[in-house]
Image (cartoon, rainbow, N blue to C red):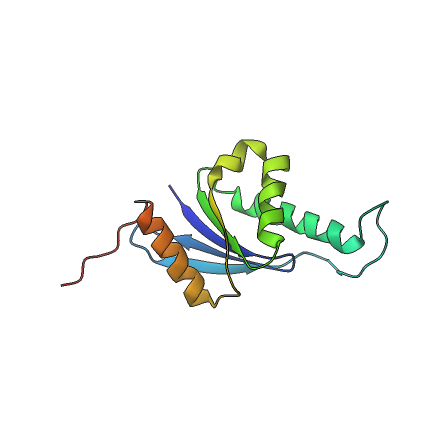
Length: 132
């Protein structure tokens, strides 16, 4: 089973894929062709909101390349919660991939990895090597 930690807001996502030994590979995803300016886009939605929704869809599709992966979703604003709602509403059969959704401060990559590693260890999903 793959384990993925994702720190996401409406403008970018940092994705960390964890190995069974706790090491992580990382990548940054940004919206494709998004301009985030507030043009009117429908009755109660701005273009920026529409762009964010497209971005959440792109991120979900990217993560679902590994359909059995389990995800820890993190973020500092509402973006991570909007992403979870997007998955629940548009990729419902994969909503169980989300193990937890956590609000955090803006974290460095090292802090994100440390938080995720701690979470996955607490869940019994990875085992850190014993130090002597």
